[in-house]
Length: 327
Image (cartoon, rainbow, N blue to C red):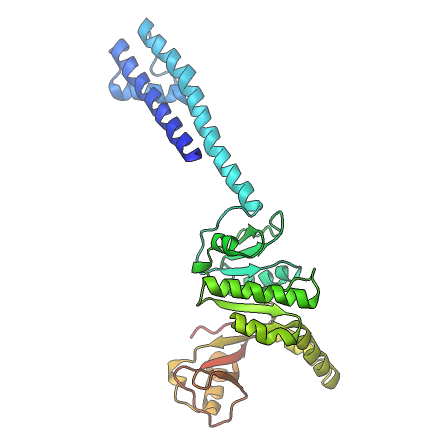
Protein backbone atom coordinates (compact mmCIF):
# COMPACT_ATOMS: atom_id res chain seq x y z
CA UNK A 1 0.00 0.00 0.00
CA UNK A 2 2.75 2.46 0.98
CA UNK A 3 4.91 1.44 -2.00
CA UNK A 4 1.95 2.09 -4.31
CA UNK A 5 1.44 5.51 -2.73
CA UNK A 6 5.11 6.44 -3.20
CA UNK A 7 5.01 5.31 -6.84
CA UNK A 8 1.89 7.36 -7.48
CA UNK A 9 3.32 10.48 -5.81
CA UNK A 10 6.61 10.11 -7.68
CA UNK A 11 4.73 9.77 -10.98
CA UNK A 12 2.55 12.83 -10.32
CA UNK A 13 5.59 14.89 -9.27
CA UNK A 14 7.39 13.88 -12.46
CA UNK A 15 4.28 14.72 -14.47
CA UNK A 16 4.16 18.25 -12.99
CA UNK A 17 7.90 18.61 -13.66
CA UNK A 18 7.47 17.73 -17.33
CA UNK A 19 4.28 19.83 -17.61
CA UNK A 20 6.11 22.88 -16.24
CA UNK A 21 9.07 22.42 -18.57
CA UNK A 22 6.95 21.95 -21.69
CA UNK A 23 4.56 24.77 -20.71
CA UNK A 24 7.36 27.27 -20.12
CA UNK A 25 9.11 26.29 -23.34
CA UNK A 26 5.85 26.65 -25.29
CA UNK A 27 4.79 30.03 -23.91
CA UNK A 28 8.19 31.67 -23.45
CA UNK A 29 9.91 30.30 -26.58
CA UNK A 30 13.30 31.66 -25.41
CA UNK A 31 14.54 29.00 -22.93
CA UNK A 32 15.61 25.64 -24.34
CA UNK A 33 13.83 22.48 -23.22
CA UNK A 34 16.76 21.76 -20.90
CA UNK A 35 16.60 25.26 -19.36
CA UNK A 36 12.84 24.92 -19.02
CA UNK A 37 13.27 21.58 -17.26
CA UNK A 38 15.84 23.17 -14.97
CA UNK A 39 13.43 26.01 -14.14
CA UNK A 40 10.61 23.53 -13.43
CA UNK A 41 12.85 21.52 -11.11
CA UNK A 42 14.17 24.47 -9.07
CA UNK A 43 10.62 25.85 -8.83
CA UNK A 44 9.21 22.58 -7.47
CA UNK A 45 12.04 22.32 -4.95
CA UNK A 46 11.46 25.98 -3.89
CA UNK A 47 15.09 26.86 -4.62
CA UNK A 48 14.21 29.52 -7.20
CA UNK A 49 17.57 30.72 -8.52
CA UNK A 50 15.89 33.31 -10.76
CA UNK A 51 18.08 32.58 -13.79
CA UNK A 52 14.96 31.71 -15.80
CA UNK A 53 11.82 33.81 -15.23
CA UNK A 54 8.49 33.60 -17.11
CA UNK A 55 7.26 36.93 -18.56
CA UNK A 56 4.23 35.92 -20.60
CA UNK A 57 0.78 35.30 -19.13
CA UNK A 58 0.86 31.64 -20.18
CA UNK A 59 4.32 31.18 -18.70
CA UNK A 60 3.28 32.72 -15.39
CA UNK A 61 0.13 30.59 -15.23
CA UNK A 62 2.34 27.56 -15.83
CA UNK A 63 4.57 28.74 -12.99
CA UNK A 64 1.58 29.07 -10.65
CA UNK A 65 0.44 25.52 -11.47
CA UNK A 66 3.96 24.15 -10.92
CA UNK A 67 4.34 25.99 -7.61
CA UNK A 68 0.91 25.08 -6.20
CA UNK A 69 0.78 21.45 -7.26
CA UNK A 70 4.47 20.59 -7.62
CA UNK A 71 5.57 21.85 -4.23
CA UNK A 72 2.63 20.13 -2.54
CA UNK A 73 3.26 16.83 -4.31
CA UNK A 74 7.00 16.93 -3.60
CA UNK A 75 6.27 17.68 0.07
CA UNK A 76 3.89 14.73 0.25
CA UNK A 77 6.46 12.51 -1.48
CA UNK A 78 9.32 13.38 0.91
CA UNK A 79 7.01 13.13 3.94
CA UNK A 80 5.85 9.66 2.84
CA UNK A 81 9.44 8.46 2.35
CA UNK A 82 10.41 9.85 5.76
CA UNK A 83 7.41 8.16 7.40
CA UNK A 84 8.50 4.81 5.93
CA UNK A 85 11.92 5.15 7.54
CA UNK A 86 10.40 6.19 10.88
CA UNK A 87 7.87 3.37 10.75
CA UNK A 88 10.66 0.91 9.93
CA UNK A 89 12.69 2.06 12.94
CA UNK A 90 9.67 1.82 15.24
CA UNK A 91 8.89 -1.69 13.98
CA UNK A 92 12.52 -2.69 14.46
CA UNK A 93 12.56 -1.35 18.04
CA UNK A 94 9.34 -3.22 18.83
CA UNK A 95 10.60 -6.41 17.20
CA UNK A 96 7.90 -6.53 14.52
CA UNK A 97 10.20 -6.41 11.51
CA UNK A 98 11.78 -9.45 9.84
CA UNK A 99 15.58 -9.33 9.61
CA UNK A 100 17.63 -9.80 6.45
CA UNK A 101 20.95 -11.14 7.72
CA UNK A 102 22.85 -14.38 7.12
CA UNK A 103 25.44 -16.40 9.02
CA UNK A 104 24.08 -14.89 12.23
CA UNK A 105 23.56 -16.16 15.77
CA UNK A 106 20.03 -16.48 17.11
CA UNK A 107 19.45 -16.15 20.87
CA UNK A 108 16.11 -17.49 22.07
CA UNK A 109 14.97 -16.06 25.40
CA UNK A 110 16.02 -13.16 27.57
CA UNK A 111 17.60 -12.63 30.97
CA UNK A 112 20.53 -10.59 32.24
CA UNK A 113 22.98 -13.25 31.02
CA UNK A 114 22.23 -12.29 27.43
CA UNK A 115 24.11 -9.00 27.90
CA UNK A 116 27.17 -11.00 28.97
CA UNK A 117 26.71 -13.38 26.02
CA UNK A 118 26.75 -10.44 23.60
CA UNK A 119 29.81 -8.93 25.33
CA UNK A 120 31.65 -12.27 25.09
CA UNK A 121 30.86 -12.61 21.40
CA UNK A 122 32.04 -9.08 20.70
CA UNK A 123 35.34 -9.83 22.44
CA UNK A 124 36.17 -12.59 19.91
CA UNK A 125 37.55 -11.43 16.54
CA UNK A 126 35.49 -14.01 14.65
CA UNK A 127 32.17 -12.81 16.09
CA UNK A 128 32.92 -9.17 16.94
CA UNK A 129 30.81 -7.94 14.02
CA UNK A 130 28.61 -11.01 13.48
CA UNK A 131 24.88 -10.15 13.55
CA UNK A 132 22.90 -11.44 16.53
CA UNK A 133 19.13 -11.89 16.42
CA UNK A 134 17.33 -11.96 19.77
CA UNK A 135 13.89 -13.61 19.97
CA UNK A 136 12.20 -12.72 23.24
CA UNK A 137 8.69 -12.13 24.55
CA UNK A 138 9.36 -8.46 25.32
CA UNK A 139 7.53 -5.31 24.16
CA UNK A 140 10.71 -3.50 23.04
CA UNK A 141 14.33 -4.19 22.15
CA UNK A 142 16.30 -4.58 25.41
CA UNK A 143 19.73 -3.87 23.87
CA UNK A 144 20.75 -0.78 21.95
CA UNK A 145 23.67 -2.34 20.06
CA UNK A 146 23.19 -1.85 16.31
CA UNK A 147 24.27 -5.33 15.23
CA UNK A 148 21.80 -6.96 17.65
CA UNK A 149 18.41 -7.38 15.98
CA UNK A 150 15.20 -8.03 17.90
CA UNK A 151 12.14 -10.15 17.17
CA UNK A 152 9.30 -9.81 19.67
CA UNK A 153 7.27 -12.85 20.67
CA UNK A 154 7.52 -16.46 21.76
CA UNK A 155 9.79 -18.80 19.83
CA UNK A 156 7.57 -20.32 17.13
CA UNK A 157 7.49 -20.81 13.38
CA UNK A 158 6.56 -17.18 12.71
CA UNK A 159 9.29 -15.58 14.85
CA UNK A 160 11.92 -18.06 13.67
CA UNK A 161 11.14 -17.21 10.05
CA UNK A 162 11.37 -13.50 10.91
CA UNK A 163 14.79 -14.24 12.43
CA UNK A 164 15.81 -15.90 9.12
CA UNK A 165 16.54 -19.25 10.76
CA UNK A 166 17.26 -20.88 7.39
CA UNK A 167 20.44 -18.81 6.97
CA UNK A 168 21.57 -18.69 10.62
CA UNK A 169 24.81 -20.29 11.84
CA UNK A 170 23.98 -21.13 15.47
CA UNK A 171 20.97 -20.99 17.81
CA UNK A 172 21.39 -20.48 21.56
CA UNK A 173 18.43 -21.26 23.82
CA UNK A 174 18.40 -19.53 27.21
CA UNK A 175 16.56 -20.98 30.20
CA UNK A 176 13.66 -18.91 31.53
CA UNK A 177 14.45 -17.54 35.02
CA UNK A 178 10.79 -16.62 35.53
CA UNK A 179 9.74 -20.29 35.57
CA UNK A 180 10.53 -23.13 37.94
CA UNK A 181 13.26 -25.58 36.92
CA UNK A 182 10.92 -28.22 35.46
CA UNK A 183 8.83 -25.74 33.43
CA UNK A 184 11.90 -23.87 32.23
CA UNK A 185 13.57 -27.06 30.97
CA UNK A 186 10.35 -28.21 29.31
CA UNK A 187 10.21 -24.89 27.47
CA UNK A 188 13.82 -25.33 26.31
CA UNK A 189 13.09 -28.86 25.07
CA UNK A 190 10.00 -27.76 23.11
CA UNK A 191 11.91 -24.78 21.67
CA UNK A 192 14.73 -27.09 20.59
CA UNK A 193 12.26 -29.43 18.94
CA UNK A 194 10.57 -26.56 17.08
CA UNK A 195 13.90 -25.27 15.77
CA UNK A 196 15.12 -28.73 14.76
CA UNK A 197 11.87 -29.38 12.88
CA UNK A 198 12.34 -26.22 10.81
CA UNK A 199 16.09 -26.58 10.29
CA UNK A 200 17.61 -30.06 10.47
CA UNK A 201 21.24 -28.91 10.16
CA UNK A 202 21.42 -25.84 12.44
CA UNK A 203 23.78 -26.11 15.42
CA UNK A 204 21.77 -25.72 18.65
CA UNK A 205 23.29 -24.85 22.03
CA UNK A 206 20.78 -25.19 24.87
CA UNK A 207 20.83 -24.24 28.53
CA UNK A 208 18.88 -26.32 31.05
CA UNK A 209 18.68 -26.29 34.85
CA UNK A 210 18.08 -29.95 35.72
CA UNK A 211 20.45 -32.80 34.74
CA UNK A 212 17.47 -35.18 34.64
CA UNK A 213 16.30 -33.36 31.49
CA UNK A 214 19.60 -33.74 29.66
CA UNK A 215 18.47 -36.78 27.69
CA UNK A 216 15.18 -35.12 26.69
CA UNK A 217 17.05 -32.14 25.33
CA UNK A 218 19.42 -34.38 23.36
CA UNK A 219 16.50 -36.27 21.83
CA UNK A 220 14.85 -32.98 20.86
CA UNK A 221 17.92 -32.22 18.74
CA UNK A 222 20.30 -30.05 20.80
CA UNK A 223 23.93 -30.42 19.70
CA UNK A 224 25.42 -29.03 22.90
CA UNK A 225 23.78 -28.69 26.31
CA UNK A 226 24.91 -26.72 29.36
CA UNK A 227 23.38 -27.94 32.64
CA UNK A 228 23.47 -24.93 34.96
CA UNK A 229 23.03 -26.80 38.24
CA UNK A 230 25.54 -29.55 37.46
CA UNK A 231 28.15 -27.12 36.17
CA UNK A 232 28.02 -24.92 39.26
CA UNK A 233 28.15 -28.01 41.51
CA UNK A 234 31.27 -29.26 39.76
CA UNK A 235 32.93 -25.86 40.08
CA UNK A 236 32.06 -25.64 43.79
CA UNK A 237 33.67 -29.01 44.46
CA UNK A 238 36.78 -27.97 42.52
CA UNK A 239 36.92 -24.75 44.51
CA UNK A 240 36.79 -26.71 47.77
CA UNK A 241 39.44 -29.23 46.71
CA UNK A 242 41.81 -26.92 44.82
CA UNK A 243 41.38 -23.39 46.11
CA UNK A 244 41.28 -20.66 43.47
CA UNK A 245 41.04 -22.98 40.46
CA UNK A 246 37.62 -21.59 39.54
CA UNK A 247 39.26 -18.21 38.82
CA UNK A 248 41.50 -19.95 36.29
CA UNK A 249 38.55 -21.76 34.70
CA UNK A 250 36.52 -18.53 34.49
CA UNK A 251 39.40 -16.79 32.74
CA UNK A 252 39.74 -19.60 30.21
CA UNK A 253 36.10 -19.51 29.12
CA UNK A 254 35.91 -15.72 28.83
CA UNK A 255 36.86 -13.91 25.62
CA UNK A 256 37.48 -10.76 27.65
CA UNK A 257 40.58 -12.08 29.48
CA UNK A 258 44.19 -12.64 28.40
CA UNK A 259 44.16 -16.37 27.53
CA UNK A 260 41.18 -18.30 26.22
CA UNK A 261 40.14 -21.72 25.00
CA UNK A 262 39.86 -22.11 21.22
CA UNK A 263 39.06 -25.03 18.92
CA UNK A 264 41.08 -24.95 15.71
CA UNK A 265 41.94 -27.03 12.68
CA UNK A 266 45.56 -28.16 13.09
CA UNK A 267 48.17 -26.80 10.64
CA UNK A 268 48.71 -29.24 7.79
CA UNK A 269 52.28 -30.03 8.83
CA UNK A 270 50.99 -31.34 12.20
CA UNK A 271 48.77 -34.01 10.62
CA UNK A 272 50.43 -37.38 11.16
CA UNK A 273 52.63 -36.05 13.99
CA UNK A 274 52.43 -37.52 17.47
CA UNK A 275 50.80 -35.40 20.16
CA UNK A 276 54.04 -34.59 21.97
CA UNK A 277 55.55 -33.18 18.79
CA UNK A 278 52.36 -31.20 18.09
CA UNK A 279 52.43 -29.82 21.63
CA UNK A 280 55.99 -28.55 21.14
CA UNK A 281 55.33 -27.11 17.69
CA UNK A 282 52.14 -25.27 18.69
CA UNK A 283 53.86 -23.72 21.70
CA UNK A 284 56.96 -22.77 19.75
CA UNK A 285 55.25 -21.45 16.59
CA UNK A 286 51.98 -20.03 17.95
CA UNK A 287 52.56 -19.67 21.71
CA UNK A 288 49.56 -21.98 22.24
CA UNK A 289 49.11 -24.99 24.54
CA UNK A 290 47.19 -27.99 23.20
CA UNK A 291 45.01 -29.41 26.00
CA UNK A 292 42.67 -31.71 24.10
CA UNK A 293 41.86 -33.21 20.72
CA UNK A 294 38.40 -33.60 19.23
CA UNK A 295 38.56 -36.92 17.40
CA UNK A 296 36.03 -37.22 14.59
CA UNK A 297 36.87 -40.94 14.20
CA UNK A 298 36.13 -41.66 17.86
CA UNK A 299 33.39 -39.01 18.06
CA UNK A 300 34.69 -37.63 21.37
CA UNK A 301 37.06 -35.20 23.03
CA UNK A 302 40.35 -36.63 24.27
CA UNK A 303 41.68 -34.50 27.12
CA UNK A 304 45.43 -34.62 27.67
CA UNK A 305 46.09 -37.23 24.93
CA UNK A 306 48.93 -39.71 25.32
CA UNK A 307 52.33 -38.57 24.01
CA UNK A 308 52.19 -41.02 21.08
CA UNK A 309 48.64 -40.12 19.95
CA UNK A 310 48.82 -39.37 16.22
CA UNK A 311 47.00 -36.28 14.93
CA UNK A 312 44.47 -37.34 12.28
CA UNK A 313 43.30 -35.42 9.21
CA UNK A 314 39.84 -34.66 10.65
CA UNK A 315 40.99 -33.94 14.22
CA UNK A 316 40.48 -30.55 15.82
CA UNK A 317 42.76 -29.14 18.51
CA UNK A 318 41.55 -27.48 21.71
CA UNK A 319 44.17 -24.93 22.72
CA UNK A 320 44.87 -22.23 25.30
CA UNK A 321 46.09 -19.07 23.62
CA UNK A 322 46.07 -15.30 24.09
CA UNK A 323 44.42 -14.84 20.67
CA UNK A 324 42.82 -17.13 18.14
CA UNK A 325 45.81 -18.27 16.03
CA UNK A 326 45.91 -17.34 12.36
CA UNK A 327 47.10 -20.57 10.78
